[in-house]
Length: 173
Image (cartoon, rainbow, N blue to C red; front, side, top):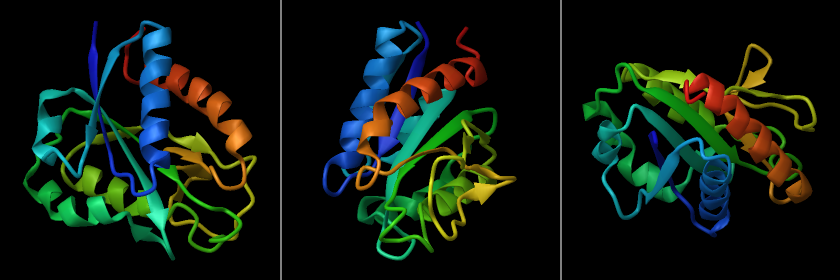
């Protein structure tokens, strides 16, 4: 079975919880084994052993990186992600931070691209209410977007649909 490395940063536990849900969804479908890495405890170069990588982070305050991601962000500069398929997921608050909704995904996507990674897992913007987001490209989010503050009831379905999408884009089927 294929292995996927899922690297996340989580301050209040929501992103860690979502990472576990994604892991469980892959396992339930017997698509791949997802190994979780809290970036507060592991170096980013751990992702180099995986051909398929998922990166997760919440956006803090007005579009800022989560503190664990901020602490390791420069580590990306030494990574060679050439040939790796990388999917992103982000948590944000579309009501409280409508003008910077999931902006941190934009910065993460930029680093992945700079290091040669191929982004997959783009997500539709339909169903969200926000004013602005740097994480939108060609009318799609740069990855799965979840709002645990305002739409927690949609998280499970969104994860299920996204994992099926990744099964195709990660060439697991």
